Image (cartoon, rainbow, N blue to C red; front, side, top):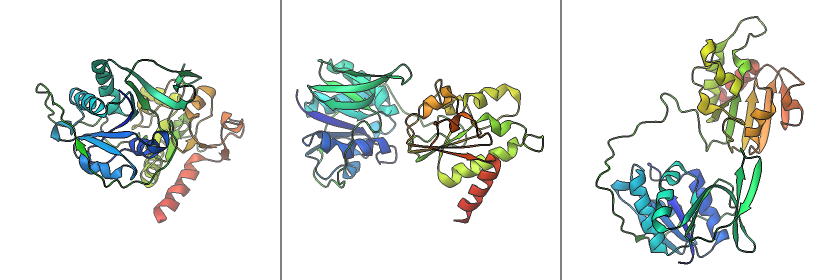
Length: 333
């Protein structure tokens, strides 16, 4: 086996996710001769979103791959890797690839590494990966092939013009006869607040539920302000641990859960910009912000943790007043 395969899942709407599009755009800079492989319903049509310079495009298309069943996706990925004859497979870190590609790696006798933060082509191929809650980074390589890598956003750099208009090669893959999709159920009920592809991360701290200057709490107003801001900006919602831990205390933001938690014991999102409100910038919480490119915070305390070099800009102001004004400005546009 030899060569590189860029393996990309097609979303339910027939498009490519942000992470997939980023990987596809950077692939020609990594290997100009790389083969592209798409799987999912509408894969042949989705090939138009690939770089114009793509040399070869393989697809597994059909209704059997519309719902992301791991058993079917694993067979599709195995067929694509065999057809490409690839010894290196690059795929985006995606819920779908994380489920199916370990199965494909076992069937192919290869190895897989997930959450890859960087790829280095010096003295052979090496990858960079975070460990110990992203406090330590290791560089490693493997001799086994095929080697499958699930790449985090930003792991590869490079841009190329999209709009592939060449032919696609259909690859046969056998769908499971024992698995049948009966519908789709969202991961959370109600409004979706966790948006990994959003340009802005908005984080709410425990201060939103505390007594304000009039001596009373204003949780319903806080919920209304936060919801309004999220809808107007399309931002993703995060939370400090101190806020999501208040679930048993009554005064809580109803649409927050531990899934929104950002920090050492939560998630480490990768949005271009972040805005923390009513948070104090403690170290365990700030650990989750290490991959945010531009960090700003709103807090009434000028001596909070955000003021000690942990935020690019700190606004010493009342978050309620700030969000009221922001929502007013955004609503006027």
